[in-house]
Length: 129
View 1 (tube, rainbow, N blue to C red):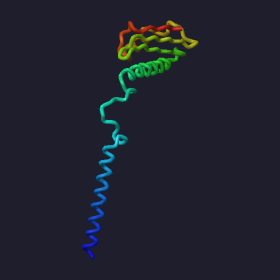
View 2: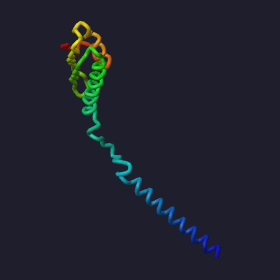
View 3: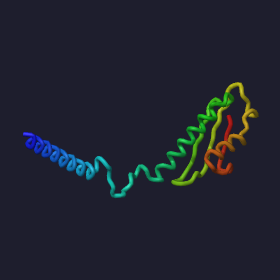
View 4: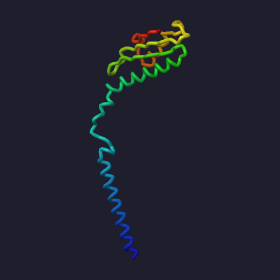
């Protein structure tokens, strides 16, 4: 009786290992599990799409930082860029009611934008209202 149980157990274990092996091979070959390995890239991840998105995000962050100053009521930063280069930056700053234009130093704002985007200050235009 013991030999019959051992043979059944061995047969059941063998079948389970075989089925697990087939399942593993099927999963390994499945594009759904590992994705497409042909080397083609997702077009939404190309540099042409990422750099303008980066510029928009950087403009949003700089706008947020500048609006934290209680002398600035509103700020809008527009970054004009090509596929891989920042062409120019315009910053329109609206002062808070109690502030004057003399209290805001446009050269410091230009330096901040220049350092953040790693561009020369000559590419930055700032208007204060």
